[in-house]
Image (tube, rainbow over all chains, first blue to last red; front, side, top):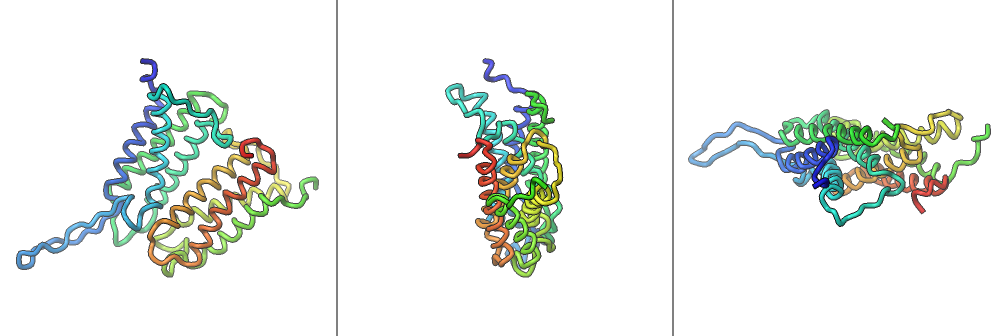
Length: 152
Length: 134
């Protein structure tokens, strides 16, 4: 049962990765107009676009994919007893990879937050993805501190 | 002046890519907007910024003999270049795949620059014998 014991950092990364995935299917941007009926025909309303929609895939999907990879790595190490991942990838430790991915996801989500999307409004998916990205960065920094490397 | 050696292919690739990316960031990226224009800033500006950071680090240490710390947050400079180069290439792939209307010359050169950065970073790893690649 030791395998089920996750550190705080790894728990944050798994939960944030899951939130990131779910949020990527929620409205990233939306366009709303007043809705009314004309001769029984409904006109107007809200059109939403998520991170997988045309015009958003792949650039807006990258933060979600990075979060999914981070959560998957933690889950595989914690729960897949038969699977052994290499200690390093291209000279990077897994802690470093988590830090790079989380930093990139956060930078991109901050950029999407600042971006002027008028006349589109920012949707709940974008805000949740931003929060998840920040949480991933916190998790990655905590991982560094849990296994002291002297880096942070 | 010991560092005044000729730049290596990896260093040239990164500096050239960074220079090209910052210049072309001011040309049309999509429709009639540059990477610094409204509706594209700052998400499209990240790519040239990554290129400039990488090129500046190489140029300053190579030609200005600037002494930087050996590592940053536990990353060697070769690792910083590889990480930034890989993320730049990922964003370049993102823009390449994304249906963002009419791709203009600025976007094409940002995409090419993004891929060139990761190539330069890989070459840098080999030239400096880090053992991480090849």
